[in-house]
Length: 373
Image (tube, rainbow, N blue to C red; front, side, top):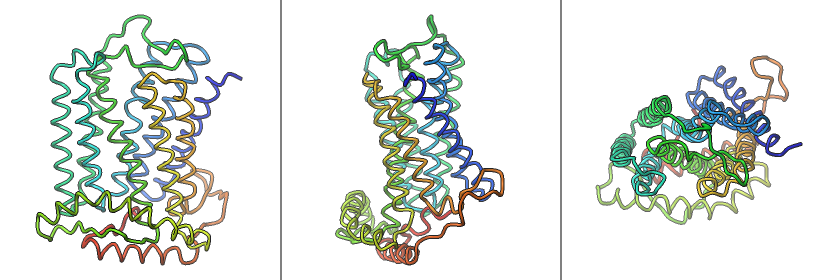
């Protein structure tokens, strides 16, 4: 069997099965994040499916265009948007605002690279739009308004629609596709810079949001040992708030590392909330998939397909582990259960509630309600 066909085919099948499971969950619970992740996984599966078909029968222009939009442009952005809606009632909005800003900044900084020649003032416009949206998300988060994911949706949906317009108006030189001559993996060299600049804009925002959102949820649900204290209470003096906002990422990382021994003890005692291992797996999956895409952008395409397969494998495993997401595993759209109704281990909910209460001490609005919607 040809690995160039089998690996993306398996990736596509797994991603589409995952999408069906997510959509079935959305039908039951009507969580917006489930529907958004469904779209993200459909794009993931279609992009990988294009690679499998091309490896088996050769590339053509429609296949190449479909691959680029679904796999290279849309997937990460929509998965990250799903995370924004999952964590919409938390202070994660600050993190999403940072992701947006960094995406716009990167788009602006790479404007002088040869592959983006001819983009004109578009990188600056992308940067300004990202900066304004990031500021709006941060302000909404500061005032504890859970409407900030709507602004995140405006960024992702707007970029998605723009990519459709740009793709429809783009003429590709013959033969209508481009691949790495060494590995046969598709590359984006035929597309105009206006369209190619949307890739880092959506991928940086989406991938960072997915990874950091998983880490954030891990921190929330694990029993904590706080080494560094911080507060994001908006009622504190402005200078104190800004200082706490700056140190919050470092405090969370340090506190998370210091809490790992306690989390391991809770796991061995059977009292660890399933969200902790689930979100760790999701973070690993998002990181591996992002790493494969990043290496591909720098010409190392030999790891591209493996990264995508491992990425969706870890993502799916993370969601299956989460009892909160998959309380029962059954055949989608039927009442046929493949497992009994699952419940969190005895004591897990109490540990999570205790961590929630402690968070409220550090932050008036705190991290309460995270990932429970």
